[in-house]
Length: 217
Ligand SMILES: [Zn+2]
Image (cartoon, rainbow, N blue to C red; front, side, top):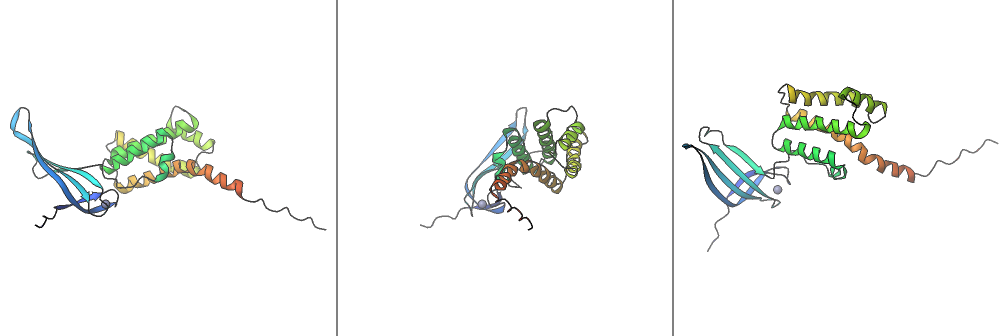
């Protein structure tokens, strides 16, 4: 007897970093009725899927609210990672690592304002770690510059990063994904220098010294 071929559907695969065909390993449907009105309900269709390429397993839930039948919500677990977290982040201190991870999760769920706020928080945490609580962001940035943690150019860029986060918090600013990517590039650059600095210093210690100049006869 021939086996029925598995159903497939297209979903984002975090490992392949793109939309791929997924086998539907299992599926079910359930309806959640409003506690006070049987005419209002959420219809859920859930799938356990595995990427046809790399076999990564995900859980997909498509829910439709009876009042908005043309706008089904699509959720996938683990959340989509639109941008892969670099391997070196595992070597960050726990505070920065946790914040950065939450920014990636916000990004993966299209929560761009939250991501901008999180990126701003990373800059705050960096200031506190390097120069302590300076009272205001401006004083903190000045202290970072005065103590050689950042250059004047980086200070100017970080001021834009923080302003973007402030606008997301106070002015309903919802940045585009490209803008968030640039902000993330900036804070990653800031944090990465602390990771590579000691390694580069170790290389410096291994470089043979220049031979002494011969004195002219
Ligand atoms: Zn895959």
